[in-house]
Length: 127
Image (cartoon, rainbow, N blue to C red; front, side, top):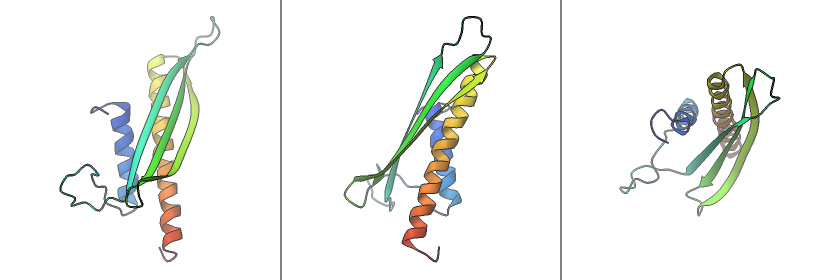
């Protein structure tokens, strides 16, 4: 995503989780092939305003988030798809959207971190 966009903030959150676990994120599109990239993670986020009762003073924003994890070194197979959805409700649409974006970003980053920890622990029991 463009700088400041929901997807860019989501990407930064994912990278922070990877770095926190001691991994170095690389660039799979690097033509020099200097990075040893073994996973590619694609993240999607969708936000939709939900219409509530006409006299309701609250705004509800539905969020959907997913990450798709591809094993680049293992032939490009998709090894996991993790998804969730939720709703943020507030008196202003701006705040409801902000809360929905934050929840979607937190899900994607946390789900990837948990998956990564699980996979690295299984691969190396002493980790």
